Length: 249
Image 1 (cartoon, rainbow, N blue to C red):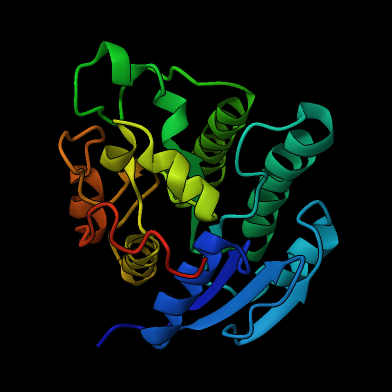
Image 2: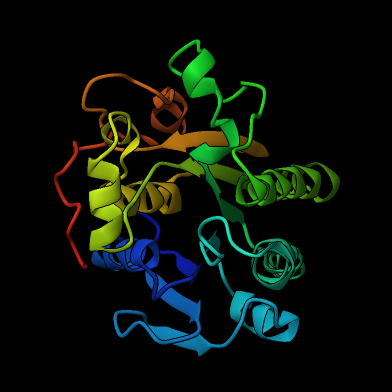
């Protein structure tokens, strides 16, 4: 029988957060949400900003697994949006996890950290590929990966950086993906995102620090190497573009 765990999900009211909450709750785990607004599926909600270090400390108390999704989700003004939400927020997440002795932390990274590898190959892109970030947003995800590795090595924490595929956040975003020739190969459905995080919550695999790619099954070409996520967490994507692309929108 799977051990029931206490899970903190930041960004719990966002598109990915709702998918993660839904699947993890369906498997019987306790979920505490941290976001600017409540998710009614959560057992508990803490309302506020991830730049509030004291709030983050309260959110992490008595938690087994932290899933840190909250962030500015794409390129935006660096100083006013990316620095507070993606840099300071990540710092607060890791410091709170360390103080609370959270057993495992999942940091949301992005396939954008290896953006240019899609053009130069080889494919699929492995987790050890040299980072080639698309822009400042991707650079903040490289910070998250580096900070996670630093905390794992220095403090004995268990940290996973999940380089997520393209999960459209609204109908315009769905159309944007559909208009590309490569988007369906890096698509991540809400259902597969939820299943990945649920598998991660339930995994007892010993981990210090790992990077994995998370996407749905590619439509034509395997862009990301999905094998590490399968080996570590037993995650196998079930969807292919466009299945699930309008769920929750």
